[in-house]
View 1 (tube, rainbow, N blue to C red):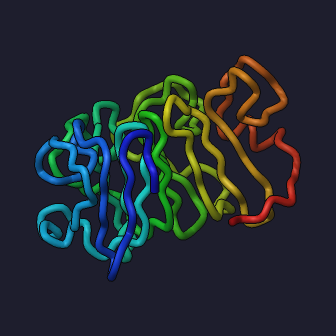
View 2 (view 1 turned 180 degrees about the vertical axis):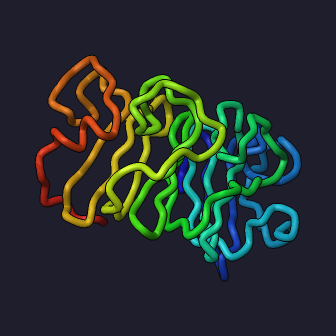
Length: 212
C-alpha cells in the first residue's frame, strides 16, 4: 500500500518491502534514515513482527499491518494514537495493537486508523477532531474503539494526505462515509458539516458499487 511519502509491498511468503520517507520510522527499520531502495524485512522479522503479513496500508505518516493470524501492527508516527497500542509513543519498529484479533483489513488515514474485523465490525483509534473515528465524538483515542457499525462491512478505506474522510463498503453494496465533509466528500448530502458514522449510515442512498 502507498502512503503519502512511503510505499510498501507484501512480497514472497508474507515478507514486506518498504521504501521512501523514513523520518518517523515509517519503514520499521530501527532507524529513521530514508533508504533509496526497498528493504527486505526478512532480516529483522523477529524484532519487527513483519513476517506472515497479509496486507499493509500506508497513511499520511504511519502504516498499518494485518498479519495472517489476524493480529495487527502499527508503524511510523504514533503521536495521536495511530497504532492503537494505548500510547502516543512512536517506536523504531512495528508495534502490536493489543486487544485486536481476527482483523481482516486495515485503513490508515492522516492521523487515524481503522481496523475491519472478520465479523464485519470496525474499530478506530487516533485523532477524532473531525469525527474521523466514526463514533460521533471529537476525542483522540489511543486504544481501538468499537465495535462500530452493524457488522455488515466488507472493506474499508481512509484518506491519507490531509484526508480525514473514510468509507466502508457493506455486503449489501451500500457505501457508508464519515469524517471531514467540508466539500460534501462524505456523501451525506450536506456541505461544510463533518459527519459521524451513524449519521451517514441513515442518509446515504444505496449503490451498486462493486468491491474491486
